[in-house]
Image (cartoon, rainbow, N blue to C red; front, side):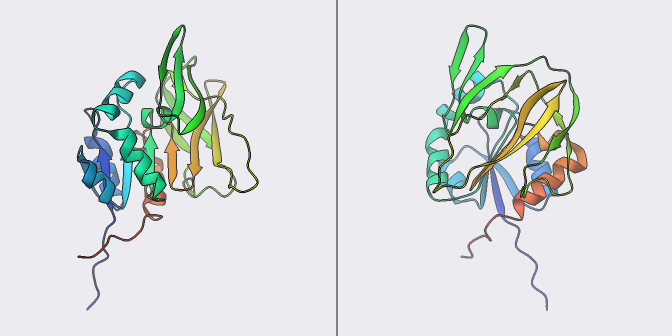
Length: 214
C-alpha cells in the first residue's frame, strides 16, 4: 500500500484582512495552508507567508501588533523558510518614502520603497540566474503604486548574494523578487496571477522541509 504524501504546512500571518484567496492558492499549489495570528503556529509551520493586501503603514502596524518582527526574526535565525508577497515584501525594506512622508519597515534588506507611475496590468519578469521560484513562470499581476527600484546591499565574499529578479512595469525597472536563503519575496500577489502565480507558489512549496511526524 502506497503512503499518501504529506503536504507541508504553510501558515499565512493574518496581520490584515483579506488573506483567504492567498490561503486558497497555497492549498491549490500543494500546501496544507491556514491563516493565523498565533506566534507558535507561525513558528511551527514548514513555511510562513507574509501576505500583501494592506498599504505599507497598515501592514507594518499589523505586523507589530502580532509581534511579526519577532516571528520573522526567529524563523530566519533558524533558517526556516519564509515567503513575503506584495506589501509583505515591501515591509522587509528599510522604509517607504511617499513625498515627505516616511514609514520605517522591518529593515531585513537595505533600501527604500518609493512611489512609481503605475498602471495596473500583467508584467513580464527577468528571472535571476539560478532562480528556483520562476521556473516556467514569467508574467504576473503587479499591485501599485509602491515599488523597489534599487537593492543597495554590499557584496560579501563569505555570503551568497541574493538572487534578484526584475521587471519593467509601465516603463520603469522595479524589483520583482528576492531569493535570499530561507527568505524569499515577490512584489506581486501570486493569488491574482493565475497559473503563473500558482507555479511560483508550487516552486516555493517544493523547497519546504517535510512536516515533522508526531
